[in-house]
Length: 108
Image 1: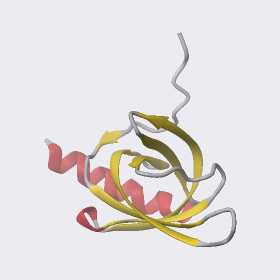
Image 2: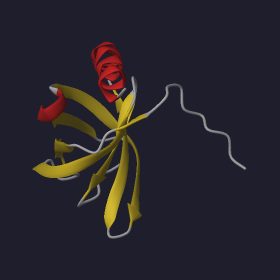
Image 3: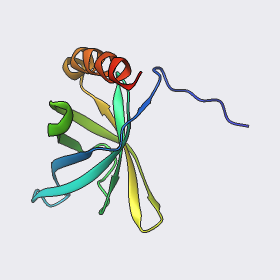
Image 4: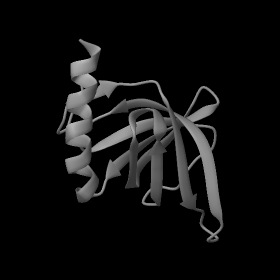
């Protein structure tokens, strides 16, 4: 059994997200993804294409009024799509703390 090393609780949120990044050749890429969950320190998305680990991205989720910078922590293929874990920069952490509080209060 593996221990869950997450620092913050995750909230499940299935809303749409846009991701912008540069690939290994420096070309700008854009994808529409689905948010699987979000926490104070990051989020996990289901994306139609892979993004290299340690890439920096801009994530935008209009429905929850969030735009932030993050880095890719893991990327794995799952059922024809990619599950990608992102860690927010320290500035976004304070924003997402308020955001996750709002999501918790509206889900009750």
